[in-house]
Length: 83
Image 1: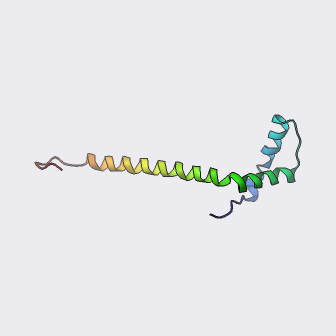
Image 2: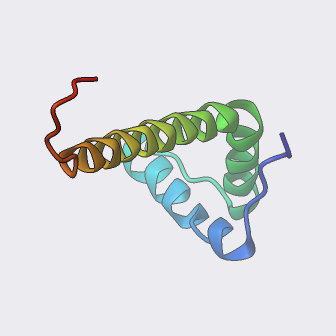
Image 3: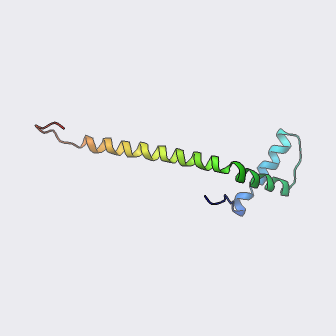
C-alpha cells in the first residue's frame, strides 16, 4: 500500500487539530506540531481507517449485488419445471 499523503487543502484541516488541543486539552500547539501530529497518525494508524473504509465499501457493494440478484429473480416467469 502506498503511504497515505494529504493534499495541501486537506492539511488545512490542521486548524481543527489546534482547536481540539486548545479546547479539550487546554494546550496550544503550533502549526508545525499539528501537521506533524496529522502525519504521525496517518502513518501509524491511517491504514486501519483506510481498511475500515474498504470493508464498508465491500459490504455495501455486496448488499447492492444481493439486491440486484433478488430483483433479477423477481423477473422469473412461472414454468412447469422447478429448479
